[in-house]
Amino acid sequence: MKTRILGTGSFLPPGVVTNNDLGRMMDTSDEWIVQRTGIRERRWVEGATTTTDLALEAARRALESADVAAGELDMIIFATLSPDHEFPGAGCFLQAKLGVSGIPALDVRQQCTGFLHGLSIADHFIRAGTYKKILLVGAEIHSKGLDKTTRGREISVLFGDGAGAVVLGAHEGREGILTTHLHADGRFARELWVKAPTQAVSGERINAEMLAAGEHYPQMNGRMVFVNAVKKMPEALKEALDAAGATVNDVDLFVLHQANTRISEMVCSQLQIPREKFFSTIEKYGNTTAATIPIGLDEAVRSGRIKPGMLVATAAFGSGFTWASALVRW
Ligand code: UT7
Image (cartoon, rainbow, N blue to C red):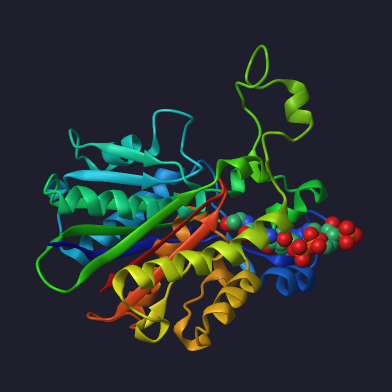
C-alpha cells in the first residue's frame, strides 16, 4: 500500500507587487532583485485576509480535483510559519472553516521544508492504516511581517504570500509517495529567524525596544543560507533517488522549493538536471516558504507538465536549518 496524491489546489491573492513597487518603499531596484534572485513580482494580500483564508481556497480546489468531500477527511496537516494567531494553530482555524470538526488538525512549523515534513507525516499515517484521507496545506502570509524599509531589503524582496494544498489517500499500485527524507541542524537556528517575541528575555516576550530594533521581523545571514542550500538540497535529492533506486534521468520533473533562482540553478548544475526538467514559479511569486512546493505541484499538474505515471522529485532547504526531499510516482 502507498500514499497517493489524489488532487492538488492552489490560491494566490490577486494583489501583484512588482520589484518597481518595492523600489518605491525602500532603496532597491528591479535590476538588483532580478539579477540576484530571479524574482520579478510577488503577491501580497489586502485587508484583514489571513493565512487560513488563502489555505481554505487552496484546500477547496484540492478537494475538488481529488473528488473528495471535506467530510471524508480524517486529518488536516497545516504547514506554515505565518499562522493567523500565535495559538492555536492554523490547522484548527482551517478545520472550522471547512466545517469538519472532530478530526485532528496538526500544525507543522518547519518553514521552507514544512510541506515535505507534512508529506512524510501524512505518508506514515496512511501507510500505517491510521487514516485514509489527509488534507495537507502549505500557506503563508509574509507581507504582514516584513520590514518594508531599506533596513529590511535583503529579506523583504524575497518573500510572497500564497497557498497550496494536496489531498492524500491510500492506494494499491505503483503510483504514490516512494520515499521521504527529513533533516535539521539547529546549530544554525539563528541564521534565518524571527528573534521576537521571545522567552529569552526577562519580563514580557515583546517590548517597545524590541519593536524599535525590528526584532519582530525576519533576520537572515543570506550568504550562510545560500551556501548551505546549494549543498544540502542536492544531498537530499540524491538521498531520495538512491533510496528509490532511481537516477536523475528517471525523473520527469523536479518541483523544488525556490528561494532564489541562483540556488536552483546551482542545484540543477550539480546534479546535471536539464533546465526543461525544472519547474519554476519564483519569477511571479517569490519565495512562499511552505507554500512553494504545493503551488508548484498544482501549477505543474494543471498545465500538463505532470501527468499520471510520471516520476516527480522534490526537495527544500530553509530556516532551522532544515532540509528534506521526496520522490513521488504520480
Ligand atoms: O528559503 C530559504 C530562505 N532564504 C534564502 O534561501 C536566501 C539565501 N540567500 C540569498 O538568496 C542571497 O544571499 C541574497 C539574495 C539574500 C543576497 O544576495 P547576495 O548576492 O548574497 O548579495 P550580498 O549579500 O552580497 O549583498 C550585496 C549588496 C550589499 O551591499 P554592499 O554591502 O555590497 O554595499 C547589500 O547591502 O547588495 C545590497 N543589498 C541590496 N541592494 C538592493 C541587499 N539587499 C538589497 C536589495 N536591493 N534588496
